[in-house]
Length: 343
Image (tube, rainbow, N blue to C red; front, side, top):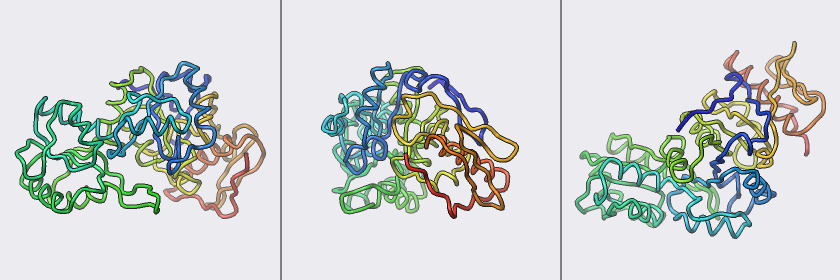
């Protein structure tokens, strides 16, 4: 995947004189926390995405969740008012199946330890999903709430004994109707500790999922759009792709100000409307950072803000001041008294 860097420097954000929907030809959109939250549409998401598509931007909907087949994901998006075809959806299960097909070839038997999304992806790549006791050249694992412990046990022994292992993702948690629950990463960690083996990981923050997205959907100037620093944004950096962090999901002020250099986005916006506008970057002033009428500085370790302006510029000067302080001192800023302005 060709890199397209527009970074100003490590600790601050990038600039784009064009709206991002014109500067990039493909948006790779994470789903939960970006397009919807716990299944319900983020306010304005459908309209913002329709406008980005009208501006000529291709949209790909990518997810680390290996359980749901792409057709199911696309149908859910359409129910939320988002135009989406099955081929617009790319999952970590599809990326895992591609990794296995490239290594072992069509017809290879693979132990499938996951849900329908993983099984369908293996079949689509010409692979043969088999049970945990069957002859196989590799093991593929993914989130699957119906997977039996007896199957996990058998697969664990085979991985320990040398059978190659590809994991769809390592997400530690997954949102459910009853709260945040253990994700596939918990199972991966257990298998890793038992077998003493690290899997090949297909999902974010590793690059196979982003590579597979570009291969399937196309585009020469991709932009990763996500809400999670340690998967979406870190995955973009590892792949050499620019990124837009939106604040409709899991990243809030405490997470943003403590982001390591590997977790910092190229662009930052409150929501997907950020695709439709140009982006300015904060500038270092005599004291602190400024942008759009806002000033942010760190005094005695505490973040201090003044001025007025657009809320998106407030977030950007906060990020610049906090990251520069973190890089220079190794300590995160204190946030006591800091309040996010209303839009």
